[in-house]
Amino acid sequence: MRMRMWMMTTLNNVAFIIGNGRTREGFDLNLLVGHGTIYGCNALYRDFKPPYIVPDFLVSIDDPIIAEIEKSDFPQDRFIVPPKDEQYEPAEFNPGQPRSNAGMNAMMEAIKADHDVLYCFGFDFLLKSEVCLDNLYKDTNAYGPDTATSYADSFRRVRYFEWFANKHPDVSFKMVFPNGKDPFHSMKTKNVIGINFGILEDKIYTLNAK
Image 1 (cartoon, rainbow, N blue to C red):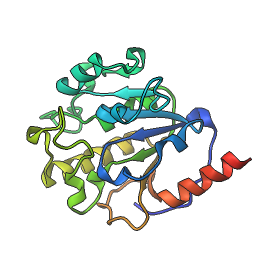
Image 2 (image 1 turned 120 degrees about the horizontal axis):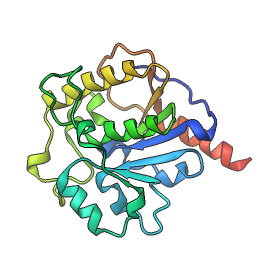
Image 3 (image 1 turned 135 degrees about the vertical axis):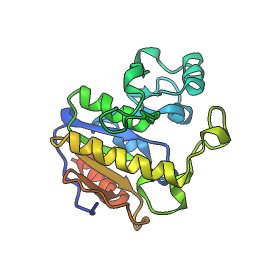
């Protein structure tokens, strides 16, 4: 994956996918409002208050966090629990069909809604460092030791994401990370690139100033 300048496209086809890897910490997600549809994952809603301008939609596939969200004040008509058959990696990719992850399901929901430019934050399994094992909500409800990932699991997620991106060649996946972050795992994809916080922020500030 290579770093490239960010190019603005039409709002209708842009979606922001917000994973909960630690690298997204420090980026003000409110900056994204008005520039595309925001899909959050799992406990992201905890960081915001009604009427929940962020996110536009919240996606989850794990029972403990689903139960929490259903009891919360997050608008239930904007809460997405994907069909069971979409909550597992496809047999075409992995016959064993292990559990997927909310980030990948959020990408699926965006693509189903005809978004073909996805800016993805906090997908730290792509990085070759210990940060890939961390999560912003670690040691809180629904994020206990039993949910912790491993290097092997992170690498499997890389391969699944690579397969998924190649299955959607008309979708542009832009992975957003802090400036100078750790190197990415290599992938054989033509539609996945990396961009820096600074490039994205500068472009948004410029657009907001018009």
